[in-house]
Amino acid sequence: MAYQQRSGGRPSGARTSTFNRGRSRGGRSGSTKKYINPSKFINHATAKADEIPYVSEHKFSDFAFGNQLQQNIIKKGYEATSSIQDQAISHILEGKDVIGIANTGTGKTAAFLLPIIERQTGVSERPSVLIIAPTRELAQQIDEQFREFGQGLGLYSALVVGGVPVDRQIRELKRRPHFIIGTPGRLKDLMNRRYIRLDAVNTLVLDEADRMLDMGFLPDIRAIVNETPANRQTLLFSATITPDISAIINNFSKNPVTISVRTSETNEHIEQDVIEARDKAHKVEILTEMLRDIEQYDKVLVFGETKFGVQRLSDHLDNSGIPSIAIHGNKNQSQRQRALKQFKDGRVRVMVATDVAARGLDIPNVSHVINFDTPQCYEDYIHRIGRTGRGGASGRAHTFIDSRR
Image (cartoon, rainbow, N blue to C red):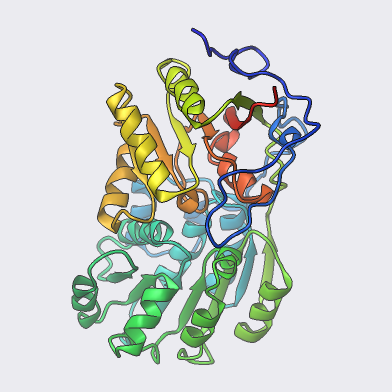
């Protein structure tokens, strides 16, 4: 084929650039795209030889969970704990505030859900737990895990996120759920409309706090947290500690235990390369040809810059005989959930997405990440390509750049 993979990771239709000039194109309206030297998109994968495997001190069966919760854990196939689970669960069970510094995909959701569920047994006042996440997809994942872990325990949740009709959420809130799991904007809206009261909350979780601050949610988070009791337990999880995160920790928590299991997100184990294209039509031609190779490109996440562009590219691939699904902000929540499930389950092998899918989502076995449009900044690039090469697997990333002929 014209664009088959070479041993060095570059499709043969791509030329190595001299990188002596370049510019970014296609920035979003209202935002400035930062120039990234294309050399930063190239990396010959190296094995994680220097990484020492974490040895857990605890299995899940070692923790003081009730019988039903232990059965639910066994049903999920959980036995050995990850580093964040191993180190955080005991502190959370003891009621301590915890700051968890951890990469995405380290099992932090179970690290906080399991001890919280155990601690809520017999609590009569509701809602007693508030979990705030930056995106609908992450909130949905947390809610799904809660329902699996909480099976048979008489605990109920309400998922409160934007992008879906509010009526069903109001009905769930009127049932007085034990857990409210949501995104800041919709939570604040329903609080203002007096459908949510937080005076009985004994546990607050801020998940991916750094991402929420990046998205401008700090005022909403402050307004929400101010409505919770001062004597609550607070759990905050973040991939980084910035001055703003430190300020939140100081304001919202009391003598927290800090657990850092973050590893360097260099993605050195991911084979990364560039593909040069003359224009957008040429990019589409190259991408379509690449994706026809089913054996090599078996589960591919393609990133585009705009909602319209992502949908148009997905439609083009479909019309070219390459089944794909799109996920972007113009899709409602049920459409996005359905698309993600199709991709996760392997019913569709290509998903085209805006950066809404770049953080927080655990999508297994992604073979390739393709940056059809370059990201807004290098940090976004790191998060994008981090969707492949997870759990010690090999991964590949291609980034389209302007031809420099």
